[in-house]
Length: 85
Image 1 (cartoon, rainbow, N blue to C red):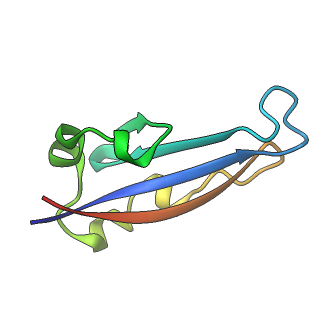
Image 2: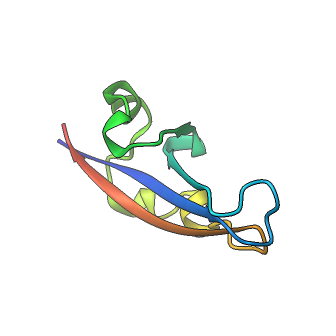
């Protein structure tokens, strides 16, 4: 079974005094539930099963996917990750 999760990678800009250059990776699922992880391999399988999307088209409707945080303090790249469970 394929399950989809939204991955957002944010980098602190130079205008961000406390987090300049810091990289934050977050994963979003159904209901825009959020879990933070520093490494892709650390995402727990229970999160994928519980909060992942069954259809890719549903993942594309996720709030974080449609509204990445791109402002003076953070620049974000959003993608959909596919898991085969």
